[in-house]
Picture 1 (spheres, rainbow, N blue to C red):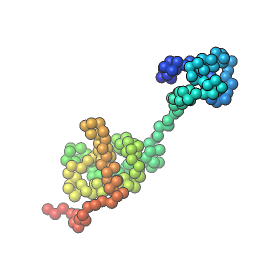
Picture 2 (cartoon, helix red, strand yellow):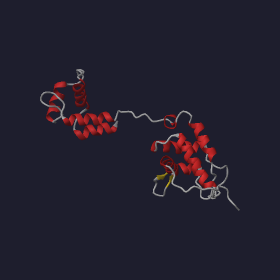
Picture 3 (tube, rainbow, N blue to C red):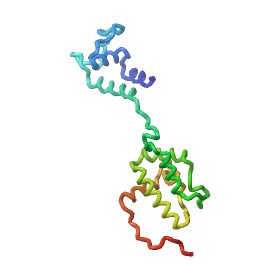
Amino acid sequence: MTEIFNKFVQEDITPDGYYVLHCIKEKIVPNNFVNNSLQVTKLKRYDWLNEDLTLTNKSLIFMAEINSFFKKTKAKTLQDLLGTKFIDKIQEYIELFPNRKLSSGKYARTTSKNLETSFKWFFENYSYDWETIIKATEKYVDDYSIRNYEFMRTSQYFIRKQNIDKSFESDLATYCELLNNGFDEPETYFKERIV
């Protein structure tokens, strides 16, 4: 609210003056508690009103700015972002990763609560569906299983990992994009490791 009053002070308009502008815009008769003739005289003098009592461009722009303070943005819930069965999908995602410690010393599987936050970020920034996410993750885990999961990211870091410069990168998004565009890899005829 302080911001709005600061705007009034910057623009040299009173709340009563703004009220009169609002009434003119909405074609409402102002209440008697405001001295209409005094306010109209001031508004004309400071280029808020034209002589025919229509709003100037200055007043229209200012009113739109003030009204923007009152627009409510509905925060999206996890269900809005991730879908109604997101808990089952996250569990399915977790189970794609091996149930073991990786060479980094961290466990491949992360708790579903940690993944909720990461997936919230992912769905806010990318528009892939769960089917694509699951297939891309299967491909990722399959690629690293051949190398005994050496240098594989955890289930959380695969979704997003923060860089030193505070930006985020997502291997999941890369794999989803590769999946949508088709992987360009030579066919492997043998998948088993021969020792």
